[in-house]
Amino acid sequence: MSGARKINNSITRVQANDEVVKLAKAPSWNRRILIVDDEPELVKIYVETLAAKNLEAVVRSSRLQSVTNAEVVPDPKFVFEVATATNAAEAMVEVKKMASQGLSFAMGFFDVRLGAGPDGVELVREIFSSMPQMFAVFVTAYNDRSINSISSTLGVAQTAQWDYMNKPFNASEITQKARNFVALYNLKQESERNELVRSDLQRQVLESSRLSSVAAVARGVAHEFGNLLMQILGKAEISRKKSEPEMREAFDRIIDASQRAHEILDRFNSLSDTKSVSTQKAWCQVEMVVDEAIDLLSHQFKKTNTRVSVLRRDNVKAFVHSTSILQVLVNLFINALHAMGSDGQIDISLKGGEGFFDLELRDYGPGVPADIIDKILEPFFTTKGEQGTGLGLAICREIVEIDHAGDFKIFNHPTKGLCIHIHIHIPFLQEVIR
Image (cartoon, rainbow, N blue to C red):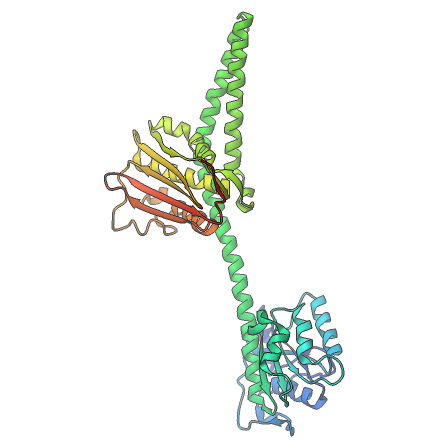
């Protein structure tokens, strides 16, 4: 058996052969194991067992049942690094040394009885405070700590982080426990890393969709600003030769136009601010968010001769991401405009109730064919060909259902057009003002 083994309270690189070690150097799993036992001979056996390519080579002991004629196939995932200690104090030195490097042990074997000082269970409780994801296997020849006792000491939250093994044990048990818990530790870490990547990708998709909405709205805002500036400049130019009362009237019109420009810019900035994606929810009047969305697309409505009819507008106070709700409405309006072309109509209804509000939008377009209506909420599914991304409705649904624990439904109107129904309920709605 090749490789070096050092037992004196230090990290030991356990090597099965040079080829395995070479494979193990690639970015991969955490294989660090902590062994804590007050019998040096048993510590040696642990290390030799984890290092053994052939279990027949394991040193025999009166406390260890050796398995003969069993061979461990080297695996680069299980080339272990082992730290050893004979008491709780020495173990904490190893733990702190590891933590100071920003590292953790994947798992450890802990003798329950450690002589003077804390026992193995109390030691693990202390280790969990700095390495909560580490796994522990308790080993004892006595029945001095029951399963319930260990669970009570470590707490319910750590139930899945430990296991129990009685002495005498055999080499296969040690090897299998080490492999199982090293694998569990690393699979859990990989799962958490994948979730972070997924969340980041989700954020990027949401930001991309927001920018698409901003681009669509920006064209209308630019046109609206041009009209307002023309009004301001025209009134200012004409008023230069007018009487004082006429000048006052002109200045009033200039102030009104400037205020209107300021309001449009504020709303546009709210929609285009990518930082608002991660902001916290806040109290807002939902009907004002509806007004903002209509205002932002007023130019597009005029250009396409689209009538916007507000059938119901309750005063609803809710605890929501107002910018996200604004984005949902803007996306839905843009979709409706694309579906209808010119001379269309959009009906909007906002209804508040006890512990909820309903927001419904209907267009008077062709609707969606029955055979694909269940698919249009799926990411990347689009009926617009190369002009569509297939993300708009999927992100609207996510904002409503994931961010606000609500319901997002889409269906064809019985007579004409497509309906979107949004339902937001407690705890995001605290109060309905009538």
